[in-house]
Amino acid sequence: MDPIQSLQALIDHAAHICVFTGAGISCPSGIPDFRSADGLYSETKGSVPPEEIISHSFFLQNPELFYRFYTEKMVYPDALPNPAHRYFASLEQRGKRVSVVTQNIDGLHQKAGSSEVYELHGSVERNYCTLCRKPYPLSAVTDCHGGVPRCPDDGGIIKPDVVLYEEPLDNATVQGAVNAIAAADLMIVIGTSLVVYPAASFLQYYTGRDLVLINKDATPRDSMASLVFHTDVIEVVNKLR
Image (cartoon, rainbow, N blue to C red; front, top):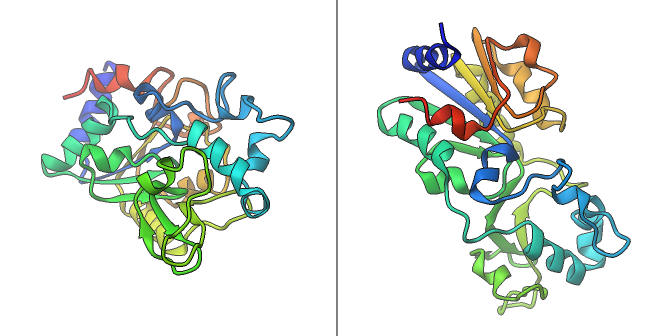
């Protein structure tokens, strides 16, 4: 059977699909990934590597440079869901249970219409005052144009609700993601190298029969998968119904 037809059959017969996504699903929306040759980590801001700039300690010590880099390189307020985001949301609208576990912080799964989304690394859409914890929209950060956003009530820095280096993942989000993966009877992994931990380790909780991998490059889990597509996810979903 043709691989696309095989994937369609798996989707048609699945009761609970878990979609595990990385940066590759959002690249067609104009959001660069982190680790490719022209990705975020290939860039520098002076002599400071990006991994250091987006760390918790750097955020505390040099918020001005942190926000300049963050708003220039990590926030894409005009990005829209692409056909891949919309396809999995449409499955839910057609009656499938579709859980999304994502390493992305762009909020595009929710914008496409997915309702059960576990954002392991947080979201640029959520922001909060580090003193009073008052929530703020993304515009509170972007309107500062690279300056340090502050709460008008108490002057506290408004921090994005994203997981920086040196910060732990949110326990409730992790538990929800683990439960969704464990309950699924089909898991589709999209646009991730599966080398970033702890996120990559989450696949160990999947006990279903079929694992599908869609990623431009090979991953350490290719040999374990029922189907592997080394191509852009858009080329795959455009052939599905």
